[in-house]
Structure formats: structure tokens, C-alpha cells
Image (tube, rainbow, N blue to C red; front, side, top):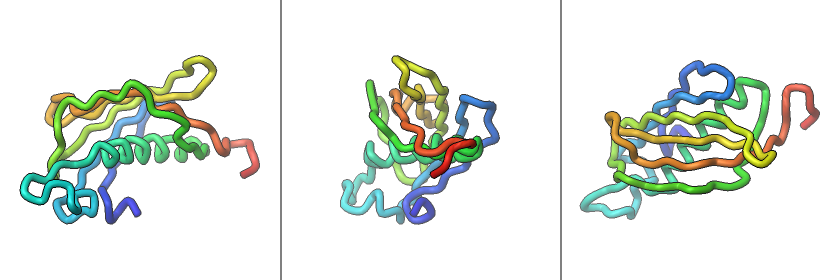
Length: 128
């Protein structure tokens, strides 16, 4: 599904830190009906990119996750077709819940920030 909706490049990251770049071309279904004269990447698309980057990072560690909650999301700038989004997410354990503090930027300008809480579905030494 990702190939149709958006592209994602995840850099090799140290444990607990996610570094990725993502973009959606003008032909992406994300832009379908979302302001044809002035296309803007929907907020849910940006959050999907963040989730995909975190999921990819966790999979490299042998873990599978699902999003449990999203908190304190603030959108500051719109993203347009073909904008390169830089995603940075750092893991933390807040109140006993695994989560990632994230920031999405375009050319050094903040697009959005927030906290994505995740739930482990399967770990390195766990059965599915």
C-alpha cells in the first residue's frame, strides 16, 4: 500500500531514534479530492508516514507495533505534492507506555509535532 500512497526512506537509526524521509507525488491518492486547485497533503497522510517510519524502525529491531494513541499533535505548515518531509522520532516511556515524540519538517521548517503511543504486538522473543 505504501508504494501507491507515499514513498518512505528510513535511515539506519540507533536504538530509540527514527530518521526518515517521506513524500507523496501529485498522483498519490492522498490528494484525490483534497483541494484539486491547491493540493495539500492531509494531516492523516502525514501521521501515516510517521507511523510507517516508526513501524519500519521497530521491525528492524524484530518488533511489531500498532498505534495506541496520538497526543498533542500540532500542525504548523501545509505540505504539498512532492514536498520532502523529514521525520524524526525519539522513543520514550511515559507513564509505562511506549511512545515516540515526533517532528516533521520541510526544509528545516516544522510541519507538525506530536506524540505517538505504540503497543507492542510482537517482540524479538515473543510468539505472534
